[in-house]
Length: 302
Length: 189
Image (cartoon, rainbow over all chains, first blue to last red; front, side):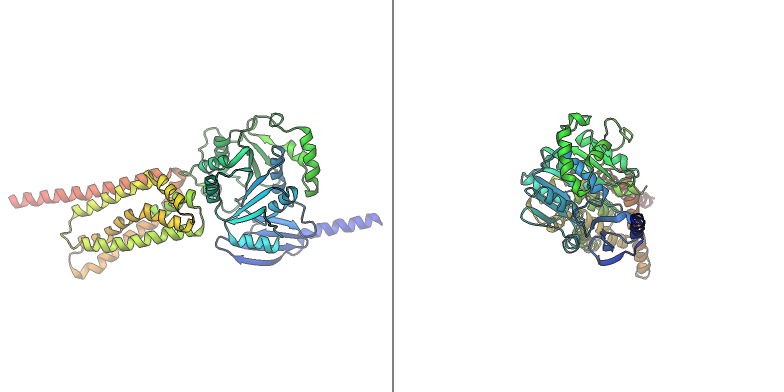
């Protein structure tokens, strides 16, 4: 009997991905097409109809806590280096999933979300349960301008998350040496910056070389099944092995407890993190991206 | 058009890449071109010569240089004083692009004046000039956005544009001189 139910259930699970996705909201914003798609329990924000690459944010309506996307899980590796971020800056809102998760994890922390597209902010509020209060705020601005203005106000952040890139278009002024230098100044002394990027092509080398030029060697967390990679850098610069970068087993266990309810296996992610010191996957003489030279989209197309 | 395209990339570090950046840039270019046409037409009524024509090219070349040389601190000054990035980008594009674009705009009507010999052919010549200048704009746009930014720093591209304009200006002046020389020789004989 149980076996039968199991078979039935697994059959049910198998059919879910093939179930007809329903578009429940669609609009053309100043910047892009925005789609909200329901696929049984899964709700996704998409910026383009045709490709699957452009899913920006997803959540399970029945378990809104679970982080669906790999990259959101990968981003959590930043907490290995700084497990009590008091001030967090998220550039690129998407559905607001990251902000929601962090607001739950760190209810006392200040979270500033920056999103260039007002329509995305509205969709996050209306369809993704994006949560805001006195501590969780949203600014409709270009990320680079926000950071420049924040520097003038002498603010700092313990964790900066760059999530402004999608597979189709890269804001080139958010990938240059000058921009990263500005972001570095904005970090507090123990501050960490993590960037979710998509680069597969020639851009991979240029992007890596640029991060290394500003921050020195960095960690990469990636998942083999998709093209995302998370670049992890710190204000102080990392040494070249995990043990020297103030990660200890206690820390990991504590974090594991906190994160498991979100579907994050931090121990697994920790084991799979790679330092560029030991594994540098790009040519040494790669040209660094600057405000003067930033053809990121052209490089990404090649 | 090549410069206009670079405009967006020059402004982005200070004013972002929101839609209003392009609004600012296109507004400033259209405004300054329209004024340039007016001034160029006016200037052409006063003893038009190839030498003056060449001089306009050279002045345009010189006024492009501040875009490469001083844009950083000019934009920083605007950024610090104007909080709203819409007006900031408008002001910055004005400061950077207004003068060179006015001067480049003067070239079109002045060319008409130099080339038209009789009113009968004026329409055809104006047509040819529009054809060449608009085709040039199209080429400038595609070459800059597809290739130049992939190969060179923005400043290098601007310096090259400036150098090409200066050479064309010198060429016009040189041709003018040699023609005068020729005329003088003829009158001596």
